[in-house]
Length: 301
Ligand SMILES: NC(=O)c1ccc[n+]([C@@H]2O[C@H](COP(=O)([O-])OP(=O)(O)OC[C@H]3O[C@@H](n4cnc5c(N)ncnc54)[C@H](OP(=O)(O)O)[C@@H]3O)[C@@H](O)[C@H]2O)c1
Image (cartoon, rainbow, N blue to C red; front, side):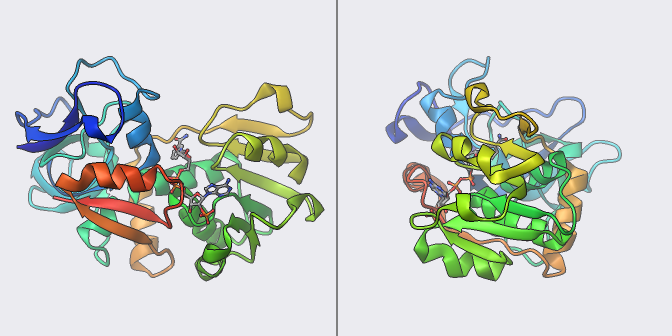
């Protein structure tokens, strides 16, 4: 099968489109013919060596897939069915014609979505869902989503809004209308607005890290919840009375079913900025690592 792999850590030039043996499903795993793969920042962090695993080179790339089931397990999805799902971290293997995933990690592909759109959903949407769940988000709360136009952020805005929260989302000026359309009550220009003047938040989702995480503590009310995604909680900045934790996304086919239902009902939209052919994976990484993507990127196989 054709696969994008890499045999040393480095810049985009280490990505190699080559022929590899098809992967063999282990117990509980299904084999999926990949029609499209999602691109996430963790992909290029893995390529650079910031995210590693214990397997030898060449290493597979990517975690998000949408495609057609080619072999299954008892109780798993039907052979021939269209599914989407996320491979378990830290072992990549989505930028390839055949991928293995736990049967429990996939759900039927939302009917409304193309394969490329469906592949853009799992990792980012599960992260947003699990982050809001970890914070105990509910109706009436004030939720701040940093980077509301990004992959995780654009799902978090929509999920929080669907829960009935009051949603504030940061973005650059060119994305303010976009986050408003997603349902943000208060789109905030991150270059010009000082959030310290805003009413305190019940929940802050930090999708950026560094100074954004540090500033987030003081935006929360006592008893509020800070969820960090790119980095661990920086204990040096901890404030008493704030519950803070980092969430690491895990595959969950049951939640993907629920997300798929919201998508098919038109409650949640997926924004795909660009779809690249598999042989342009390096270009997709270059675009992703600018940190300026609106919504998501995907690869077409
Ligand atoms: N812990 C986990 O399990 C987990 C899971 C998923 C993602 N992550 C991490 O979370 C981060 C976000 O992931 P993602 O997929 O959402 O990334 P992404 O799609 O690449 O995010 C891009 C967005 O970030 C915004 N942005 C860039 N710098 C910003 C800043 N200083 N302040 C506010 N917004 C800013 C940009 O919007 P504007 O151009 O409008 O500013 C852009 O739309 C990444 O570091 C990723 O590795 C962690």
